[in-house]
Length: 74
Image (cartoon, rainbow, N blue to C red; front, side):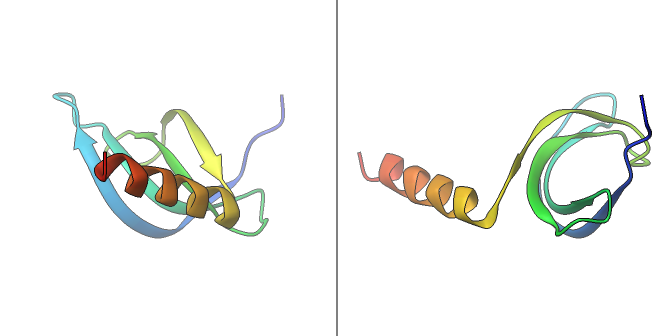
């Protein structure tokens, strides 16, 4: 399996921290030198290891934002 290249281009938020120091973060991440996308996943303290996560395009992030806004109104 080929190595996956990633660059966190912008840290947007830390959502939680585990007792072992891993953080669930919202970042803009460039995967394999492509356009950065929104990314939510767990990261080790040194950002060398990562857990499973979800990557969202700009359009998907805006749809998620709207859905979360709708939740707060109900």
